[in-house]
Structure formats: structure tokens, C-alpha cells
Image 1 (cartoon, rainbow, N blue to C red):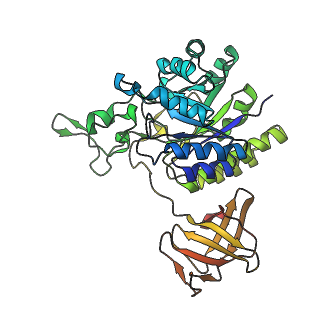
Image 2: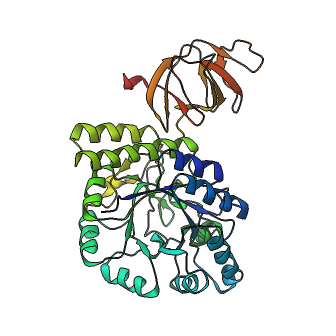
Length: 404
């Protein structure tokens, strides 16, 4: 039996490399055209070639999103684009149009064609229909419960992909027009303004009927499906997908590594104990900036899964530095500052080959080897004495007070 794939997002070349180094089996990225995350940095054609070559060094795959809702004018140039992706060794494209499936199979037959969650595929007949068009994999809609996923899997041999982590849509994925209506930014063509996360006052005519002290949001909690990973493995899901092409390098590193370790442990041990699941949930929480739950997977849906009041969105300041290099003779790490920390702070370091080692900052220097008391300049390069070895690509975060 093939091991389940861990599929990670990346909005640019640097983050794609981090995802692969931290344990992703595949990454999905967007080009400058045809992608639903048009406000991400996205990849130039040369970047796509570079990440394809980089991924092959790690035995990983690269999928390119071509998943906007196509209008007639969008088909101009698509054939040449697909042929280029095939030529540079991209493994698959993610599409949301049955017409595009057929174009891919005709113009670039070595590319696999994965059908996006934008089509909201939620039953076995839909999956088989997409297979007849030529789809090699179907990404199920995030509205499916775990019981429904298992039932679909029993009826189809088509490889299935399921979202396990990240942002959710307050409407059916890919069917929302709030952003179009309010900002003229088309959510289905890469311009979603996340209008569901805005704050609203509710009126009945001219009468305010909502709490004036607590504006309403329609935002959904984020998805965290860690409790269902074992069931997904055992029922034969092909790929577990993390959402977040707009997310930071820290989010990608932490979430990818946590699911990598969880998946490997399930294969090695056969299952996870409640204590081990709690450990992994705690690790995932270190990268969250909104409340999370299991979405629709439990089969239950009530108001507790939405953030109608204060939506809880915020930026975590735990992540404080990125390791650029390590001097084994001096036992010094060269770091790039991301958030404020100071001498005396307790720091936790993690990386592709390093698991949550802690130390207290004692000696901190700038590039001229002047001692520094507080690191408070983003992107500043500093040097810190380490009691253990670290490597380029490792990350520093502050230890939370409730960790002890």
C-alpha cells in the first residue's frame, strides 16, 4: 500500500523549499496566471522550473494551480502554459473546469490532472463523472463528513484528496460572491477579499438589531483534522492537504513538520494514543492565529463552528528568528530577526532535523560583534550563542508561559 501523501501550500519559492525540507511529499503553488490566490507572490516561470528541480532532489512532487473559474478570454495562452509545465517536469495541475481537464489531457498528457475543491465534489457519482473526463485525482469538498468520505472511498478507485488543516469558507467552497458584490474582487478568479471576516451591524429596516458592542462576523473557525488522520489513512485516502498559500514560513514549517511526524508515527505504531494526539494538537496550536475545530468531519454543524462575534484573528508573535547559518567552532547561529525577543528569553528551536530544543538567550551580537540586549529590528542579522547545534532553515520561537 502506498503511503499517504502530505501536500503543503506555498506562495513563493522560498516557502515551497521550506515545505519540502520540513517533510511535505508534495507542494502546490500558483503561477502568475490562472491561480485562485492572485494576491500571493506566486511563481514566475523560472521559479516553477527551479522548484520542480529542487523537489526532485527530495523525491517530492510539485502541483500547479490552474483553478480559476475560466471565462472565454482566459483560454488564450493556456495550451502553451500547460506544455511549458509539462516540459519542466511539473507533476500535476489542479483545475476547476471539466473543459480544462480535456485540454490538459490533449495538450500535455504527461501532466496529471487533479480536480479542485472548487467543484465541491461530495458524492461518488461526481467523482466517477470527473474520472470519465480524464481526472487523475479529485479533491473532495470540505463540506463532506468523515463518514461520507469513507462511503465515497468505498465506491470509487479514483485517488481522493482531502483537506485536513487551514482556513475554511463560510459558504460552499468556491461558490461565494460576497467579495464580488462588495468589492468587485472575484473570489472565484483569485481576488477574494474575505468579506465573511469583516465586522457587520445587522438592521431590520432602519432598526439596529445586533449588539452594537459586538459586531458580527460570518467567519468560520479554521480546520484542524488531526483526530481524523488515522481514519483517512486506513480508508485509503491518497493525499492530505494543508491550506495556506498566503501563510508564513513559520506556519508552513510548524504545520508540515507536525503532520509529517504524526503520519509517520501512525504508520510505525498502527495508531495514536490520546496522549500522543494531544501532543500533536498542542504542536499545531503553536501556528494558529484563529480558533480551530474539525469542520464538517464530525457530521455536526452548529453555531459553535463559526465566529459570529470577535473572530479571533490575529498574528502570533511566538516566531522570533530564522536561522541562516551555524558556526560549529564558535557555537554561534546567524539569525534573521522576525519578532521581538531579548537576552534572558527562553527560546524553543525546531527544524527539519531538530525537535523542540530549548535554551535561554545569554549572548547576542550584531554584525559588528557589539552585544545586543533586545532584538527588535525586523530582518536584522544577529548572532546568538547556542548550547546545541542548529542548521540553516531552523526557526526560533518564544516559549509560551503555559508550556512549562
